Amino acid sequence: MLTTRQKTKVIKETAIHAKDTGSPEVQVAILTKRITELTDHLKKHKKDNHSRRGLLGMVADRQTHLTYLKKNYPRRYSSITKKLELRAK
Image 1 (cartoon, rainbow, N blue to C red):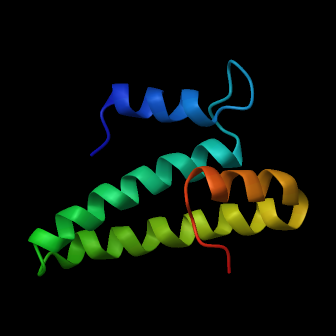
Image 2: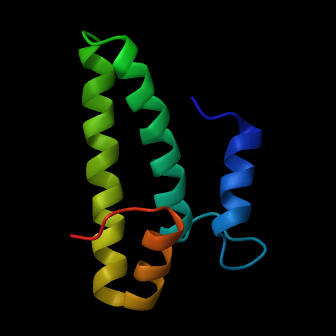
């Protein structure tokens, strides 16, 4: 689970402007961090199906945000995928 400090750090790294907390880039970055932590958890606890379902929801949500960025703001999409080292499909 993300602590407030970790979340604030992620927001500062990807924010477009000073008070940005809801842009697609910030949301993708936060989801990526949460997905990474949950993936590590599931490597240890293979039978935790409730967390696995949550992980799948987060991955789908992140993909929705990325699709929106790719369609409407291709430049911002490419910069966020490079920054977070996400593979482009």
